[in-house]
Length: 101
Image 1 (cartoon, one colour):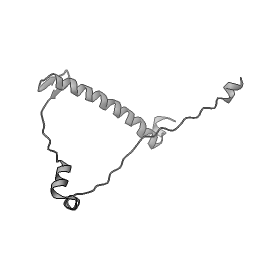
Image 2: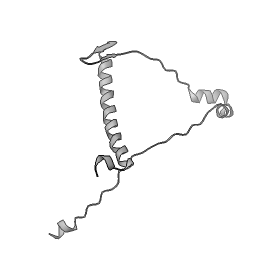
Image 3: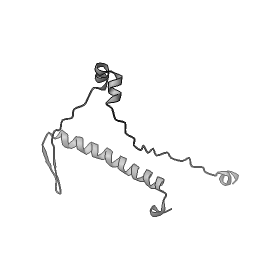
Image 4: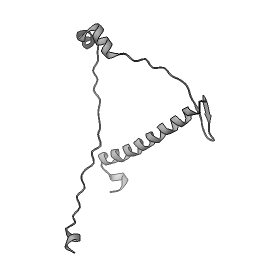
């Protein structure tokens, strides 16, 4: 099959592999840029600005202990989302002709 008529599951798996590899490389490049210690890293075609951000997280165990399970349940929202997992199929190879020779 050509790339244009492959089944969606096969195209998804192929693109996911490309994205995973790109994300791995991107993570390494990000670490390299941050390691420079500079807030501006210049390139020939692009410059990368490095800024610090701040994130606040909530200690769910502490909230549960302080306010109780009923309060947490009453003030929580559940959302649904899709999880896609790529599962390779087993490939079977007929070796009977090769073994008969």
